[in-house]
Image (cartoon, rainbow, N blue to C red; front, side, top):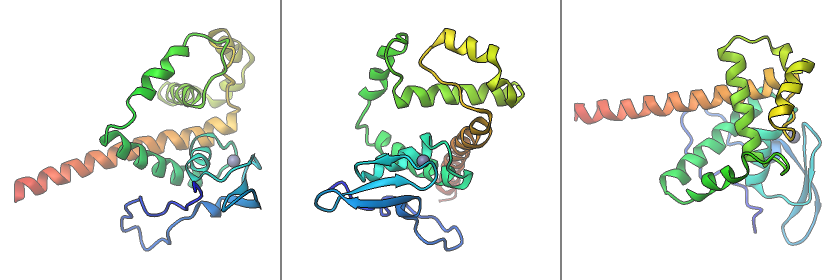
Length: 193
Ligand SMILES: [Zn+2]
């Protein structure tokens, strides 16, 4: 039942007539594992799942796949952010943000995906904004420093920092810029009317 293909909730803007994207362009459908469900695997990093929950697969491609091409990362980042934006405005899940803070300072517990994403974002901002050479991310002393802070966090390799993480941060920035622009357009229209 969670196996529906979610193309519909995304409001498509005119982008030169691109065909609607399906998750199955980026995810392999494997063996059927029950009524209408499939085992799945990532076309890029070969990660496998015993389910085919589209939202989880989208999250993998947007935030966690180490091998997805930049264009794919951007596409799913945009999609996931649009969905988050919607659920935020419908005020559904405020609690999840507070919850994750509970284990912020205990590195005996495994880092959850959300926390990991937060650290990655802070890392890429630091590298870009301060003009730090990307090779530093693989420097032993840098890794040691990070491990002292949180032993559970694995620093990304240089390629992941430069390709996936930077692309994700750019997608966030573009998304924010676009929604600000949209607000302004709405304001202008309101004034005109
Ligand atoms: Zn993957």
